[in-house]
Length: 210
Image (tube, rainbow, N blue to C red; front, side):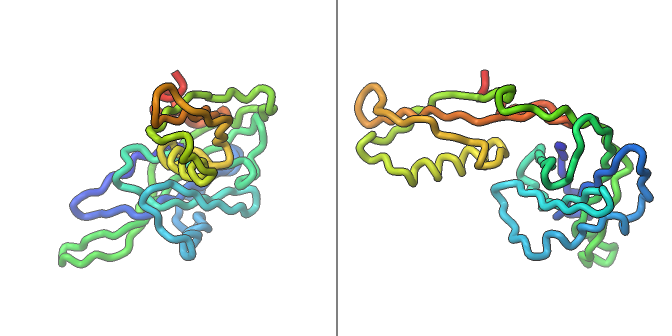
């Protein structure tokens, strides 16, 4: 799910919450139904990556994430394993943001805003490993091949994960070899993009996978 966080002169959003129910299960449209409001209490804030914390109660999934105001479109990935989603099942999603609201006296106090919009979706059927479509590309790094170490792989995977908001375990460096000319190393990189029910591929992924 993609969100576009916005701050105003009187409200500064800090956290986003998503509640996912089956279409046959109606919302109460009250803040109390978001049972994960304290999910980020022990999760440190990171201003570089988007992480989502989810939990399930009575077949309802509630997810929490910090809002990164410097990211125009924030991609929140809800995993099937975390939310117990069922293939071909229909769901609807409600949203809530938490932040600081400035009163007329100039005092900032915690506040929550409930979104009036609902997102409707149908979970795609489960895709086998053979049917997943990998994105593969070569990356030339200005680094002598003789200086290559395995720690470079970890750093590169982390940077790709941060840049296109993809879990690190889906990124794989297939090979590293000396590039044409001196002082260059060529990395062959692959990552898998599974079909998602609520959003098309982001522009960053499309740019890499031309």
